[in-house]
Amino acid sequence: MPAAVIARCSFCAKPNTEVETMVGGPGVFICDGCVRLCVSVIEGKPSDAPMIAPWEHDLPLEQVLQNLAPVSAATTQVQENLAAWVGKARSLGATWSQVGEALGMSRQSAWERFA
Ligand SMILES: [Zn+2]
Image (tube, rainbow, N blue to C red; front, top):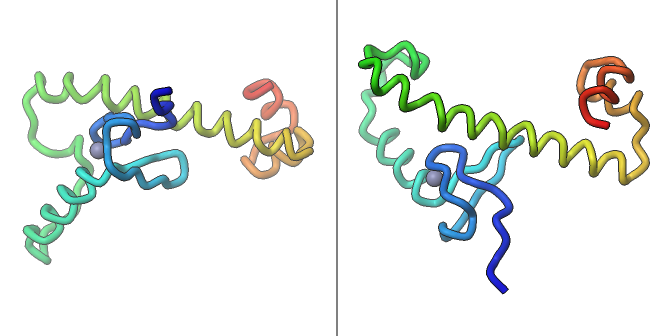
């Protein structure tokens, strides 16, 4: 039986079945290939380089448009991941009030969003 796709790398969108290692964070994932790329970027970055948001770089419209689908896919995965964690909390007996409090929303809002 082929391995199940549990998550996709939030950076390159490869599924866990196509990478050697996947590291999970709060709703996000990164594969070993992207970690290696990040290390090379960090090592090559001047120590005094200012950090700016990716969308603040001077980019051509075509590249900006190409970024929309991957950002949307990552957002969908985060939303699905949150729903799975809420489902886990509910399966362990959490009330909608507890879920809402953990998320900083009302019981009603939590129920409407996740029930
Ligand atoms: Zn990746």
